[in-house]
Image (cartoon, rainbow, N blue to C red; front, side, top):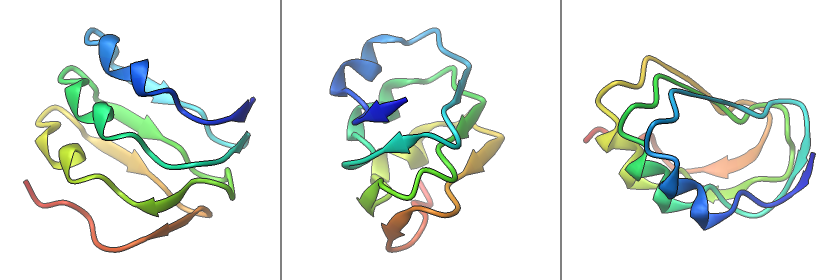
Length: 81
């Protein structure tokens, strides 16, 4: 896969696993990811393109157990809430 993660991702409210590792993604992780309240596993590792910070809305994902963001161009700290 290549391109960006659409802000429409937030409409997939029943999504539990979002694994898109080892692709050619670019852009940023949209704040709408915080609307995925059933998300348990988020893996955007090994894409080399996503940049910016991890949105604070990710901290609202109370069901999230697995978060992989390695080997990207992300900066900042992990959201605590």
